[in-house]
Length: 84
Ligand code: FES
Image 1 (tube, rainbow, N blue to C red):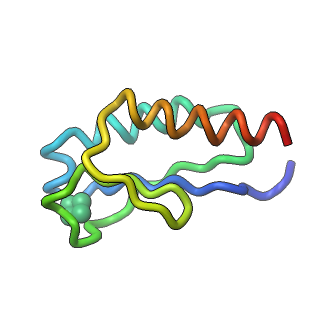
Image 2: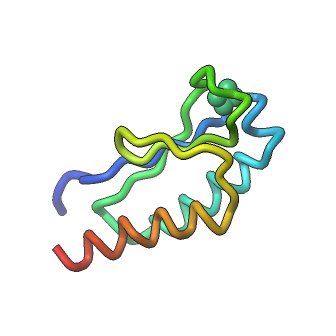
């Protein structure tokens, strides 16, 4: 099994959690399950609370993420890994 190629971090600071980050985190973990090239972590507040919930995919930040969007982001990564 190779090292993870993509790291997804879901902010679980208070403000993002109040805007649904817990649901996003669980959705991301479920979607990444079984995809060794993608890992999902929680992260602390990134000082962009007013734009949350915030999700980082590698170095890119995504603001105001909803559950459907986190699914799309993970699907893209999983598809990329499975076609590599
Ligand atoms: S709580 Fe997520 S950026 Fe501050």
